[in-house]
Amino acid sequence: MGNRINFIDWMKAIGIFLIVYGHVASRTIEYMTFPIYPKQLGVAFFVFVMGWYLGQEKRDPVLVTYNRLFPVFLFGIGFALFMSAIVFITRHDLNESNYLPFLLGVNVLLDYFPANPTTWYIGTYIHLVLLWALILQRLRIRPWMLVGWLGIEVLIRAVLMPHGLYRAYMIFPNWGTVFLVGMFLGQHGRGDCLSGKAFPIYFLGYAVFVLLWTLATRRFVVGHAFPFREFNSIGGPWGEVARSGFVSLLYLGHTWFVFELTRRIPAPSAIRFFARNTLLIFIAHMPLWYALGPSLRHYLHNYAMFVCVNITILFVGIGMASEVITGMVKPAYLRGLLASRLGIPR
Image 1 (cartoon, rainbow, N blue to C red):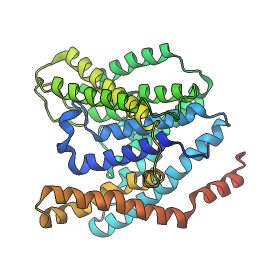
Image 2: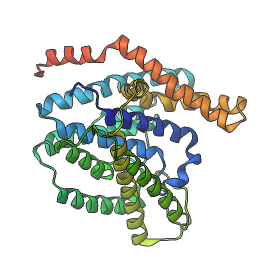
Image 3: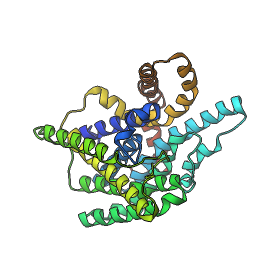
């Protein structure tokens, strides 16, 4: 598991870019992903990769759970403390909601995001890891399970959407099928492909998928609800079921095409760089966006320049800072040190 895997590095790098770009300039591409927003595809890629990794795991689930949660808690709580200090000095507030994801992900039961909004995913991440450790690691995922869960996922989301969009988005059933597909492919040894001959075919198929989806959904009157946009032209329970079905189809369609494409091409050093620095980019980019956004809007009147500067700071800049911070903190060393103190077998 120590070797770098091309499609994982690609999907993590693309995923974090979509999340950052989606916050900076979502309006430029969101017409292609109705009823979701493009940044949600980044989350789907991360969930899929996590499922694939866990599908490959043969080690003690206690060790795997510890290894996965340690860096998330280390950097997540560390940055939450840093934000509390900054906000207390400037606004006399502690941003307490930033700590909710670390209370076993209780934040997903609420209909709002933490003060640092992207950290909602930490709660969902914890739930998916625990779900695997307690139940799924014993199962061999079968195709009928994927089909069955897809139906359950669509219905759960459709029922919850009218009663709290944020809850419907954050709880693990919203991401269940993508996660299970990742596990299924991991368990069956589907990873990097040595041949790139099929790459043009998948590329053309993906382009057709995006184009047809964009053209087909233009006929709907689209609202701007978040995190799922609504059909203003279709109401009632069937409208919610259709909207929920579209969400699952988009998650799965984009994830599958990107997986099939990226497992056929090598990941260059730049992609590997961003892939290994996704955690801190993910945690830190929204607070920095809030801090710098007003000033950048004031000085950068050209929208393209505004987007480029933001991407440079929030994506490249934080990635470089993450590389330095990770080298200084040495999370792998700290993780091993704490494991030895806790008696967790390596």
